Image (cartoon, rainbow, N blue to C red; front, top):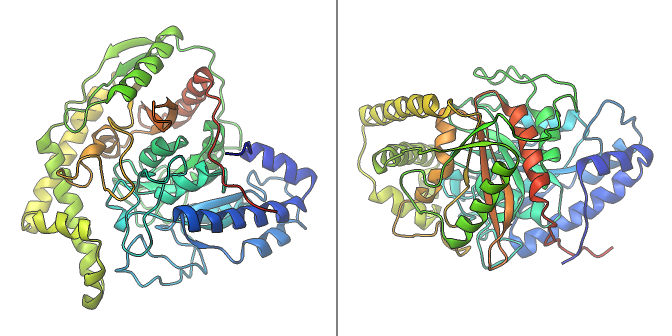
Length: 461
């Protein structure tokens, strides 16, 4: 491993004083992205236009652009002009995008250089790095292990030092899960505060980074109002204006969730690290209260069937001769599901809506809820989860329900397990308390005081 500590603020300061170093840094990041593709399958493509973009930026004024020259990645579910979009599956044709998704536009307006598009699991339907178009994505901490999903390549590449940050998407935990597996930070914001077309009541884009501060910087940029999202109500803030340093957690009512109600419970390593994190919160003055989410197998079954319909709809939209390329694990999951009518789907969707209201009401009694991101943070890269006898997203019970309630939720590393792999802590706040959540997360990050030795790829000059 090599130590290459970098942050958005460090890069911005460097580029402001030496604009020509944008070109050098972009070249280094592009080379690292190529290595991460060879070794980890972290990218679907490296942006051949990145270095010319950097050369143009080197002649410009960085004033007013908080991401000036900073190399970043975006998940393959997003559109980037001139780059192919596969959405993790060989069912697609890799059509080259002719426009930029709203988050990508915002990054570029702020001066970022898009180095490439990161790999994702099949249609975003798995919490691992499996897809039919590209090789399995691997974790830089241990390539035999999964990086999580569906924003698999984003988690792997940021942990490996290709870029300091990037944008993923999250429908049941898809930025928080890979963040936890890879030891980085991720924010699933309050639903619809980050514009994403087509608008969704479940899915959100979210920043992924090595530090909370960098996640905040990206969120300040990409959460600005955009007319492409008819459900959106973005935050239009001045860069840096949202940071309110937290000195302690006195007066904070914190719900402690040890298990969501179904799925894997915490293993020994996760429980040990979680107890340490909870003790830290108590030591900082927080009022701790046991909290039970109370999600059931019946609730998960409704969610699972709705995701099946989503997958079936995407398959129905492709040319019939391409269906043969569907990932076998996804095909087996769909084949095992029941035949469903539109009425069945509506019934399940309404079930989820009703449960979301109940969960939101109960969760709103707390300023903050804490939990692990998963009960078990390691499983082989070739598997879709820790228990192959269960449905694809069964182990995501700690994360999936905050997409339903629309609350902001973050993952940050709370330490390493005995096998040297990262374990994630999840922090959940009330709706539209994104900035407070980030402030608290930065405090918790500082209190954890992890001296992370990142598994950086060694890039030859």
